[in-house]
Image (cartoon, rainbow, N blue to C red; front, side, top):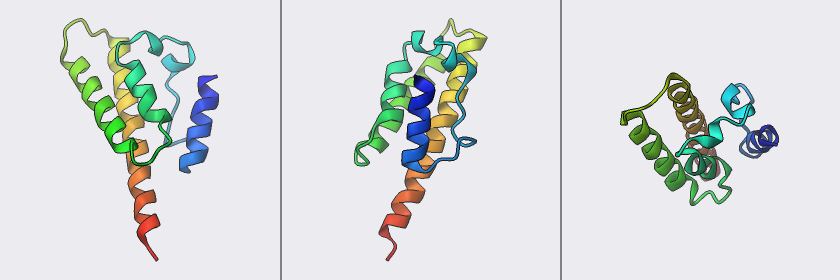
Length: 104
């Protein structure tokens, strides 16, 4: 189901699947157990372009806060790196899209 969501996001934002990889931990349902997951998912699923920058910023802040906390295992650390990369891909795509929307 989440794989379908990412395919939809890729389609809506024009992101090629190579730019928005689906982390292995996401497929197995393990990423959902992390405290930052809901904010991260909200950023990826936001469709209102006026809200996307704020959602991305909030998710990035939450992920960076978690990276600085004690008790972070290697699996979660890699999941955070994957999540940050995905957020960056969405942000880059949004910037490109907004630039193309303003051109005549």
